[in-house]
Amino acid sequence: MQNEQKDDSTPNVIVFFTDQQRWDTTGAHGNPLGLTPNFDRMASEGTHFYHTFTPQPVCGPARSCLQTGLYATKSGCYRNGIPLPGETRTLAHYFKDAGYRTGYIGKWHLASSEPVVQEERGGYEHWLASNVLEFSSDAYDTVLYDEACKPVKLPGYRVDAQTDAAIRYIDANQKKPFFLFLSFLEPHHQNHRDNYPAPNGYEAPYADRWTPPDLKALGGTSPQHLGGYYGMVKKLDEALGRLRDALQSLDLTKKTIILFTSDHGCHFKTRNGEYKRSCHDSSIRIPCAAYGPGFMQGGQIREMISLLDMPPTLLDAAGIEVPHVMQGRSAMPLVNRTIADWPEEAYVQISESQTGRAIRTARWKYSVHAPESDGISQAFSNRYTEEFLYDLESDPYELTNLAGMDAYRDAADQLKERLLARMSEAGEAAAEIIQAEPRASGQRRVSVDELRVKL
Image (cartoon, rainbow, N blue to C red; front, side, top):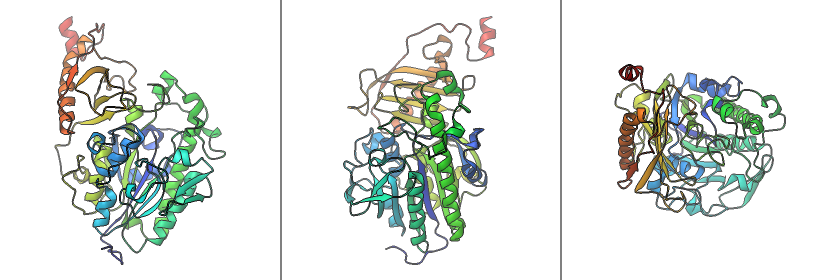
């Protein structure tokens, strides 16, 4: 049964979820444009998960991971267009069982139809959402669907419209423990126009300003799109500030956990023909910070964190037992500095552009793909080929692919074994990884010690 009066020891939980937001849009990660003062303050006062990565760099699969704590291949939602199986338990189920009211506002992308029928809403009670928000709405034409599957047109720019709805929900549920998932489309592109529609007046101040080094080197669509993209990020951060102001006015700040994160990043058509679906940090690295009970003064966490770790982390922080079925790990021991054996790599599954697998360590990026798979019809392969190897210590923007270079063969072999182990842990069948075609390394060496040996 749901609690009618709020227990002050039971924290509310809000997930503030953006779409296609690069980690380096935030000041906490060095962006010089002042786009995210609210996120930056949240990260400095709460806990900043500095190295956070999506386990699947595309919308639906990443969302399935965050809702279930399962890899996309485990839940079955390994590509867009596959609905979450009805029997699958989500965060909504776990929080509801613990006495929480549950609400979902915004983009869902885990159903088979629009509007989303009750059976495909992942157990959420309050519902004001769209399965594919980029198709049901535009920047100033926000249409969501309610519990009765009726369209609701919300006034204002889309980010503001959803934030208004979230504040109304919080106000109506302030005396009961609630779990609210607030899912924005921004700063994702508007599909039918292939542009990034910022609020009126927000694009021009950021046009032709700071460009991340990978985009500066590789180009893509960033000269055309960064102004609008940054303007959308700025509006999202203002929405975060409004949400926190509402909590303060209702005396809920100290009783509410806020998690800010995104589903994946954006490489602006530099790595393939669209904006994500690659192993590169521009696709897989995301902003992530938590604020509120359990997270205050958590500092900066430098370990490799997966979006898959956030479901058990939220449950753990709320005092709810973490289900054994979840494949992520609660990061609360890291926050509390009570653990030393955290995994040293993040594991990534890639679909749609290819059937790919990758690991990202503090120093290395190693990625493989299945040449005979189209990334759509198959979730797995039993045969992969090495595709990318980056030494992030000397090449942080992943501009020089080292795959196949003889001087890096030992490093690649070690990474291959680590990747195969992570694939097995994720529940995948045994697979073979074929070495990349050998090529000479020239002057490149893993270390100066190796160079001395050669000399």
